[in-house]
Length: 455
Image (cartoon, rainbow, N blue to C red; front, side, top):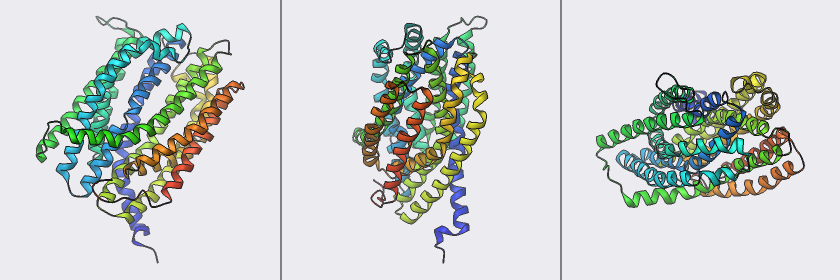
């Protein structure tokens, strides 16, 4: 006899709940990487060195922001747990602590990135024709770091409250503004001067600032309705920071893996007649990978919110049932995105650059990325489940383990003369495969199933 959580009606109910959160999150997450895709499409028409420079600068910016992703993930899990336990005022108070923490981190990080732009770009060892536009873009884009962190925290609060529609509206509006501002400021029109790659960075900063303001106002109004104080609660801010440490380590290992991959590409590029081509190709491939990762991550966002809420309410059976169903969604989503990427691979390069060398080099890399999509679906779903459960310590440990195995082998592949497609094979098999093994192992056990308002 079927258990209540495995009946067709129960599965349909789970599907509706997952879709209610995942579909708006999917659309919002698709809009997020369009910031970089829009920048790449515009900057790519300035020239291949500028596109390669954007790749390096974008990697640095996303590394800084990625290290602070706990502002979204940790806030989502904490707010959802409080909501599941019936403590809505406490949920909003915890969300406000996340916003204050984002502002406290953002200001010094912005100053440090502006001051260290030259040495940060120099770490990649790129030629001057690539390093100069990279530094220019990075100095301007750094101004948008504090708004980006506020966006993370505000989005996390709303996801924890089971609201993924408001972040969708803000993301779409911000993305449209970014595209218009990019075209206007990069190429100039009327009284607006042509700013080149600096205009692309400025357009993104202006759009991000508007998004941060909108999300912050939504959270503040909700807090006022519930009677939550708007003043910073220092113990709560410190608690949010401590809870974020394992997620920072986890994210640091992920970003380090991406950075070492980029570094391996740069090392390979030094042996070619045109070093900008493999770097630019890798930038486009990684941007498209990020786009598809965000698509699959929509299910993980639902996993964070629903897992946190069920565990906050003490419902372990529901947590298990939702995990099983979301894994099915992740595998199917990965197959669909993989097939679409493989079919579109011969034509995608033309959307971003007129350089035929980059277009030709992009196709085999995208085929490797397409083959890895089902694995990515499993990885992102289970990552979301464990984050929603507050299992950050295990994720940090697993991240260190995977990085330790992946980094030397991808660098060895580069040193042995492996081209860009082979570097991506190593990325797919060792990095993504390693993550899948560690996450499946953890999800099969019970130690992550901690119930109550606090993890």
